[in-house]
Image (tube, rainbow, N blue to C red; front, side, top):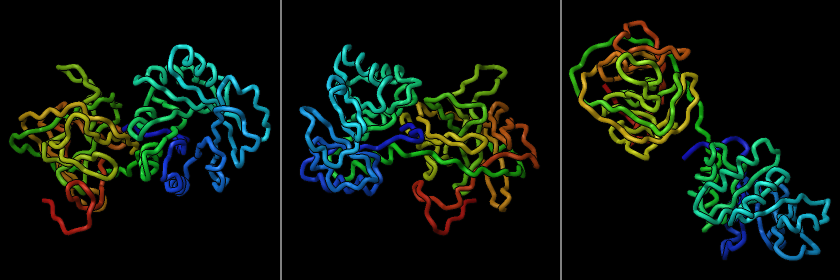
Amino acid sequence: MSAARPGRECWLDLRGAGPWRREVSEEALHLRFDAIVADDPADLAGLPPSITRVLVVTGELPDDPGTADVLLVDPARRAMVDRPDLRLGTRVDVVDAASLELACDRVRRDELTVLRFHDPTHIPLEIVLAAADGASGRIITEVGGVEEASVHLTVLERGPDGVLLRPGGPGDATKLTEVVRHRSPDLDLVTLTVTGVRHCGSGERACVDTCSYLSPDEGILVGSRSRGLLLCVSETHPLPYMPMRPFRVNAGAVMSYTLADHERTRYLCELQAGSTVLAVRADGRSRPVTVGRVKIETRPLLAIDAVAPSGELLNLIVQDDWHVRVLGPGGVVHNTTELTAGDEVLGFLPGRERHVGYPIDELCHEL
């Protein structure tokens, strides 16, 4: 899953919500959803003004829209609605080329457009988002589930401004907020001092090949101990005998820890195609990236020892080769075979022990 940009909205669709309409409404209110959508004014009655109440009009405009804040209407009927006290939105079902052209027109003109795509392809959404580039209106897409929402949010990198979920039952609203509002936090990296570098025989090391292009000051955090990790840089810097591979981090020995997300660690040997790993930049910014492959091969190994300002001792075992690199303060690139005692490198101190990757407070000595 990709991180959502700030301002993404969570909408709940009560149409067809069944016997648990009240439960999902209360869940959405508790989670501070942005809007609740219904086609019956009675379903919006009693909702507080802290949430936008959206009434879908499919036939004649009701004489009394109740407590609705927004009327969602068909484009052909929009000009007939004379309710200056209410905001108007447009709803378009995209089913063919004509309705796709209509959607592209409305997102360029209207304050709010709600779209439903019927075919199992994301190309129409891509086209609509491209057409809306630079427009000031907001686009909400209807989704049938949380997994579909996570895909919509990454289409054309930007995704829509929000998603409208028709829940399958209580709990779905909570799952949606985890997808829509998730943001990978910045990490507080620390400056470590190298205390020694030594050759340590041979063993299996892992190259982590991601499905993303990594930046010159970006890599993944790796370490022999869960309480301290060093920032290994991506292969985005020139190599004398082979082309650069900007999707790769030559990470470390297979037993090493890395961060799968901002909280949970994984062993490098546990990563596989489809896993996620946390990419981290020298300034602490992070993002989850998808692993495309992990290459494990036997190579000569090099052990790097370092110490944190707190006195925490760290260790990293990497392939013993010049082109394996770690980052220092300011994004300075260090070839690991040229490190000497006193050099400064970047690291991260999770601060807690680990059990199957989860942080836990217990006695644990890692030597």
